[in-house]
Structures are given as structure tokens and as C-alpha cells.
Length: 144
Image (tube, rainbow, N blue to C red; front, side, top):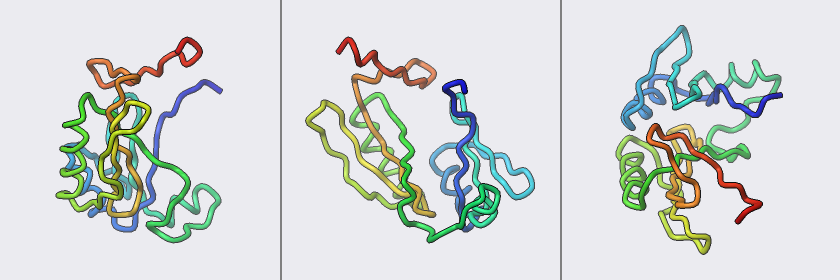
């Protein structure tokens, strides 16, 4: 298997509400039948009905808003961008779940949950440089 993620699909309880939330953050969605697709750098973010997604993956839907064992991350170029994006997410209908703070490891981050409870970390980490197009490059941890 090549080390690549092509699509991330979020199970949502209200497709229109979820689309409005991500579009309020500046994303541009395209609705196709009962899904909404967003281009997110080199991968796609998809919104699809929670029950349908669970069935399609052979799982039970479980409780919306509970922790599902995964956190999406959005890295930015400055601490100020972390604070601004957390505020923007809250204005769009999300909930800040962790106020931004500096870590002992040199990065600055906070977190929010979208209207369906999907957690997002927003981080500025000088050790994870971003290219002009937003692509993140992990450092060679063996040389640090």
C-alpha cells in the first residue's frame, strides 16, 4: 500500500448544516447526490450521512458527537492564525474544545469540534514547515 490518504469522509447528521459550517470556514463544497465534496489540498474531504457511512463501512453508527478515536489537524503558519481560525470556527457554529496554548515542544495549538462533534486541531508548529501551497512536510525525526 502506498502511504497516501485520498479521501476523508465525515459522517454527519445534517448534511446542509455541515456544508454551511465548512463553507463558512472558506471551503467550497460540491454536492453530488447525498454527499458534499471539498478539495482539501491533495485530498478530498467528504460529508455523508452518518448512518449511511456506518453501513457502508460495515460498522454501527454509534453516538454522534462522541470521540471516535480520530482527530483531524489543520496546520497554519503563525500563532495568530491559530487564534483566528478557532474564532472563525466558533462563529460558524463549531465549539472550541481546547483554547490555544503553547506546548513544551514548541508548538501552539487549540481545538474545535464541528457541528457533528468531529474534532479538529489547529496548530502552528515551526518544526512542520508548510510549503506555499499548504503542503506539510514532516521532518526527518532521526536527524533531530
